[in-house]
Length: 110
Image (cartoon, rainbow, N blue to C red; front, side, top):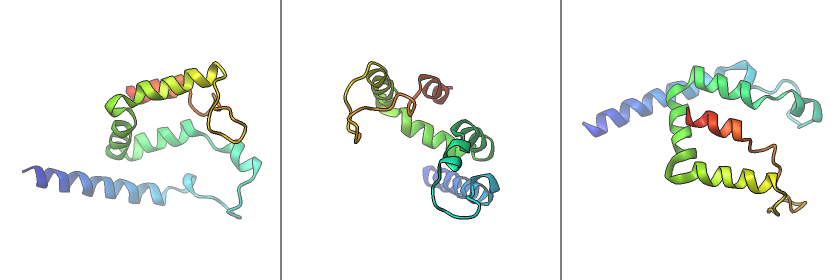
């Protein structure tokens, strides 16, 4: 029985991934080179909402992976360290507090 349900879930996730691959808003138009204008137009919130809407099973799996086994606490700890100016592993030896926001982490929980 477990194998049956696992196969069904994997088929659903595969279908959702195919749907996301076809999504035009996730495609880069023109040159693939990363530019500042392409970076500033990109929205994590829009991408997150799109995945939640078009691929709910995939979103659930990714969310469980992110917050499972106490990961949410570790992510919030990193965010708080960065906000307080703690040293990190980046080239400038600082973690960027904008990369991990408390609001987006709390959104994962819901």
